[in-house]
Each structure stands twice: as C-alpha cells, then as structure tokens.
Length: 165
Image (tube, rainbow, N blue to C red; front, side, top):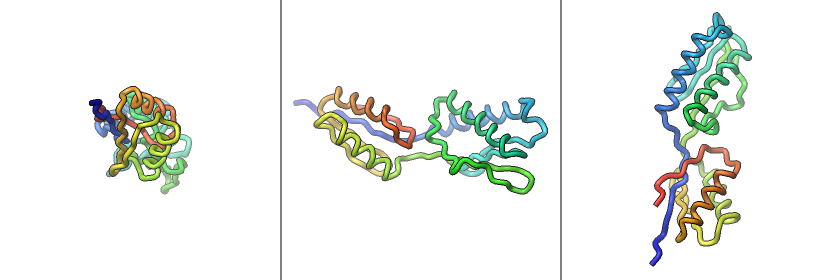
C-alpha cells in the first residue's frame, strides 16, 4: 500500500535572525557618514521595529539598510509590513514602524487552497489548520510540483515548507 506523503505550508520568521539583522543595521547606521548628525536609528519597540531620522528621505534610507541586512540573513521582505510605507512626522523627527507578519491569515490560506485545487496535480489535498496549510498526496512528485507552484505564485506571505514526510 502506498502511504500518504505531506508537508505544511507556514509563514514563520526566525526572530533571532531578524534581531541579528537589526543589530547589523544599527551598527552600519552608527558608522555611515551620511547618517552622522541626523538622529538616525533603528530598534525594537515591543513587537515593532521603529526607524527614526530627522527627514523622510533618511528614514527611507534606514529602511533600505534594514531590508538589505534582512535579505543577507535569508529573511523574506514579504514578512516585513511597513503599513503604507510613508514616514510620519513626530515632533522634529520622522518615524516609520514595521511589523513582522507571522502565520498565514485565513485569506492567504484560502488562496493557497484554491491555487492547489485549480492548478495543482490531481489527487493533491489541502487542509487549513489554524495558521498553516497541510498539503498531502500519494505521490511525492505531486508534492514537489505543488511546492514549485507555490514558490512561483505571487502570494503576500513569506512561505516555508516544513514537516515534509
């Protein structure tokens, strides 16, 4: 008898890697000449990442440095949500807050299920459980096709494939 093979589609971020990227970005901002005397900084504020500088352009430059460090650490930028992406004036400084998106929301999970049903191989089943999607099939080749399909899809989440059995 052929047994079922499966894997989970999740959206998780390694907080330690994000913390390392944040520390690297903070060091670079402290050392770079173009950030001298502009009050530029990036740091955790609870669960949010707060970027501060004295002008809109500088805050966006701080965001660019942070994004570069996240990419080097292997963290998808889809996991970083900056809202509308425009810095807000707060007194004499500008602030930009970013939140890490973790877990699949129900809308994204439904999109994944529909994509697998419509474009995936026959005999592949998907099941939404909380903030993850379990995909199962009799053939491992079919599961590999589904992974390739999901990697090529334009979904608004940083997808990872875990518990491959």
